[in-house]
Image (cartoon, rainbow, N blue to C red; front, side):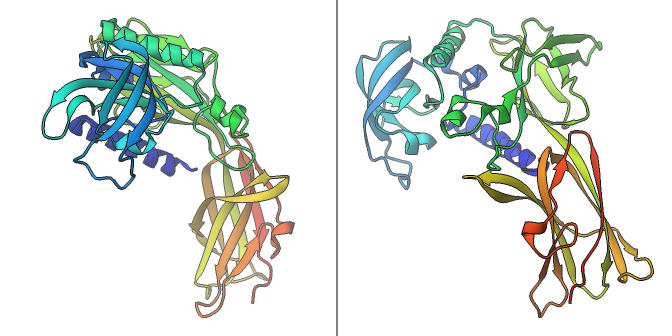
Length: 392
């Protein structure tokens, strides 16, 4: 996954967050953060509880709004109010497709009486407790929600620093979790980073506040004066740093966040990745060819066999006149911020629009089995220089 895709995913999340704030729709996230409870205003709800779904009615992914989903829920842990031990709960939620029997959720609810439903109704926030959470993690979540309900001030600024890498199978993992282990992925491929210095610099007076991440990659500023802050890490240039969280995205490596005096502070999370660059120069091309498309393929394994996953592709750029004795022209090209790992380089050449394309692999072979494996190292730039074989 390249930087553009990462930014696209983040911006999609921001759009969903803004839309959900307007329409008062629940989150469908499988990742909990205590500040989500603040922005869903659960401290103002009549009932908040952890419950297990016993049965559901009208649970269809194609179901339109208008008739709420009805579920019978066993209340496991009360966080606010006392709706009873076994309740009939009506749900008007984007997450209804995942509300299944035996599923565990943290619900917010209240009694309503209108043309849609008469009874206990939940519409604004429901959070799934999936199998990836241990009971210790669940209790931590519940305790954080209790603090919000009681009106206790949470730390002014919190977040995580997570190193994103690739699994051996080529799958990109955003978070180290027990679920990844169950799926067979080594959590070291998406690991929290310890002892990373995070700085919050106050714009008004330039004061700097620093802290370090713990073993879980988490950090927190308990007491910050109100104001606007720049938030950044001390990670070296070998890391490609992306930021997400409840902030405005102003740049890649620095987040800008307003800290106020409310119950909740702000969340700024850093997803980072070791990366390097690849510079490519090749000749023996002909000016009559229509296109040359270069693509990088990630080399992984699946059941002991080599597996290739396309990482990035682009049309050849920076044309130059070739030297005597070779083809008419050559090209210089580069792939920036490539995640650390092993790759092969493929060229797809259109020599004639009426004929099938020709495929060439670095350093100049038609056979993928003979392609050279390119090892991208952190902070390094690989320089690949080669000539294309005779393509007719």
